[in-house]
Length: 251
Image 1 (tube, rainbow, N blue to C red):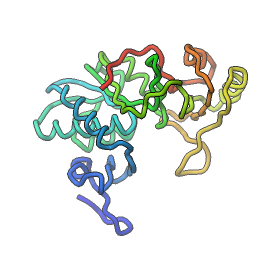
Image 2: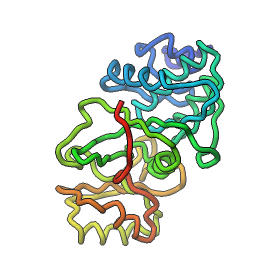
Image 3: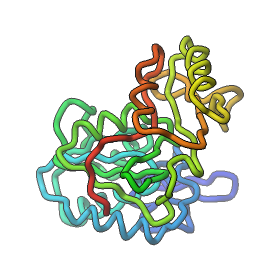
């Protein structure tokens, strides 16, 4: 169930990977070596196990993006295998969908059903409950998940809490390539301190989302309430990683 690769071992499935532990990498599959590193691993494991305890046989649930959501999926996969549970899963990104299939969990397309509950992470959470997300560029799918689930759980550790949204992360904005110039002019006029297209790590040029769009990251000293709605009003802007007005429970 594993293959040699450059002298190291590539884990062939999420189930096997789980048993080997972090030393062998928590890869979603042998074809997708993600995640390579997980910060605050043990805390995120505990959060994932807490969420997995809510799981009931026959339910449809949702899983978001990022390492905290991924480790929640890991804990859910353990329960499914151990107890023979029959569940259906909706995911907001390719990597979590691939990992779910590795656990033998049936996946559904977002929008085809209503999840009883869903779990997602965040990069920053401010005192008003607003969130910044989107390092994986899956903002559109994440918003679909958040709007469709009956109940949302937020999987975050203490490092995610900030006094001012945008302290350590920009607002990620998914934009059609033809709308980049218009978006740039809006950012110049509305206080962005700097912005730029997100560059890819495995190819030359910019990141391309699963929907074929670009991601522009915009930094602000202050992010006023309502910024998301203003950005979404611009032609070409598909979605942003600024989450405002959502109800959720913190794990």
